[in-house]
Image (cartoon, rainbow, N blue to C red):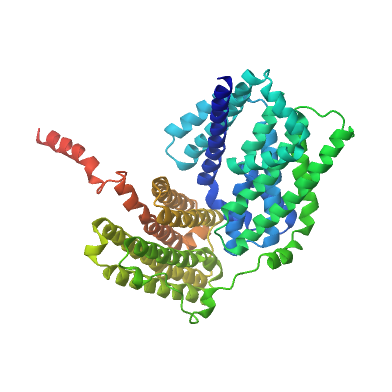
Amino acid sequence: MAIVSFLISLAGATMLLLYAVRMVRTGIERSYGASFQRIMTRQHSYAQASLVGLVMAMVLQSSAAVALLTSGFAAGGLLSFPAGLAIVLGGDLGSALIIQILSFKLDWLVPMLLAIGGYLFVKAEAKKPRQMGRILMGIAFILISLRFLREAMDPIRGSAFLPAIADYLAQDYITAFLVGGALAFVMHSSVAAILMCVTLVQIGAIPFAAGLSLVLGANFGSAFIPVWLTRGMDITARRIPFANLALRGTWAVVTLFAANLALRSGVLGDLQGGQMLVNAHLAFNATLLVLALPFCGRLNALFERLLPEPQSSEAHALPGRPLSALDTSLIGTPAQALSSLKRELLRMSDLIDAMFRPTLELYRSGDKEQIRAVRDMDDEVNECLSGIRSFVAAIPADAFGKENAKVARDLMEYAIRLETAGDVVAKRLTVLASDMRKKGASFSKDGWAELVEMHESILANLKLASNVLISDDLESARLLSLEKTEIKRAERDSRKRHLRRLQHGKTESFETSDIHLETLRAFREFNSHIAAVAYPILYRNGQLLETRLIEDMPRIGEQHTAETK
């Protein structure tokens, strides 16, 4: 009975720890995720890139999240292999530093974190204060889960069961290494897995030698997480996680045998305690970074040979003609027809992304060729819409069913919104970029920063909209709708700040006033179009009213009654 109670308590503490780590990470991603691309893709040396990775991992509390972001930017051609690998190696050390901070006994902070975090999360309306509340509550939950973990071990600490397991793991360090690796991979969090190992050593549940082997295994197992999560990405994106796995795995195995040999021979003395285990974890990641950083560039050619680019079927397509995902032979099969529609919408969304991404660069350069290339892509977007319209029109209503036909119509409506978003870029933003070049004007420093922040947020929303399109996930749809409100707020705040700059007589603000305000309006409209994919999902789940007038009607009625009296 005691064992069952122990396992339930251990499972509860572990799940709370995993949830808390995720809560902190999602809070940070929702607050500052739009800026990650700018921060991670503008590094000029391996040392600078590794420092960025270290800070990002400490902020996100996850080296795997840093590796995923790096792989995504590498897939988009925004980050080179050497710089990406340096960021990931720095992220591993940053994750170790977070464990150092969280391993301290900070239980006294819990009430304050819960009070402040809870107040911000419940009461704040603005996005960043609300997400800051989420982050503070997540940190409090991490500390609570670690206390639960310590308390869960108390009932069996004096039993014969735990010492037997602990002694076995201390003697068979290879098994302990494999257990640590499996634990980190299954939990999908090296921070959570290693914090658990450190806590077990702190309370004396397992000896230092067993804890060290578990931690080294967790380091190895955590390197598999981004490899697994990027399995569907392009090979360019996957090279970085594989290189990190090779380096991390090799160094973990070497350290495992060397450390256990030294411990058994007494060379290292009698090492004890959770803090010593944290120090060993830090030393492992720091030495790996120092040893591997100089070779980041040289490993590029090796992994290009080991993981070559696959032969693309597009090489056989007609030059200059993009491959459509629409297949008219699937029209009679609802599930396959809808999947075909979604793939074409994803292709359309990628074209919109490619049009919108360089807009601010066009404001600075005014490059005529690049402006022409963006406008040419709008023709491809129009062709996508024509194809989707014809595809949906050819669907047999009787065989397709009422519900599937409604989904197809919703997808076509979203295609129309995407085409309109493309027009915003091609017919308004590129015109404004040309005007900037003709005037030779430039934005004020504050005005430019506001546009950059808004641009980054919209790019993040484009990715989120693609995820909503594929997954039909209600929570993601809600988040996308909330992000639309945030863009409206950002546009309104930027407009107010711009008018204040005009009142203070800033020359740059006067020169670019019309362009600045028109860009803000275009950005808001563009974002509204891409966020439209969330509406059918929200409406189906009762999260959206057909008209905003519904909630206002009683008040209008009350006002009318008061007036007649």
